[in-house]
Length: 155
Image (cartoon, rainbow, N blue to C red; front, side, top):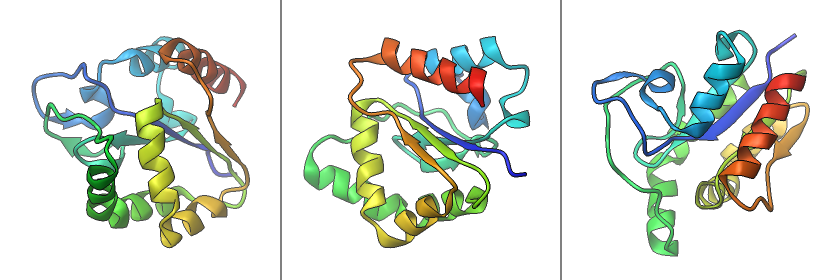
């Protein structure tokens, strides 16, 4: 049976040298994962929605950066146009009819993810998964952390 796929956002807190994406990010969701699992990759395929790189595999080697996720419609559209092909490829790499996908993103990243979902090939890859959970209507990082912890403990 395939592992479920988990999609989380990048974080402002980062290491200052190039490294694998999961190791580069030091924010709250990453801290939570490290505190609750020896190796996330034993349990989940992990994808990260990065403000600079788009939807990346957590095992991808990346450089540190300081970029914010765009929030205005024109910039968000540019983000999707730039990253939709790679995002689709990375999502499809793990898409499985016998495993689910969990999306745990802050609201501005969720807006970018929703724009990616409007792209037909990305949507098709997303809908290949057996089940889908997208964390919506949350009131902040505390709620996201609670939801992520529940996912980590129960899947």
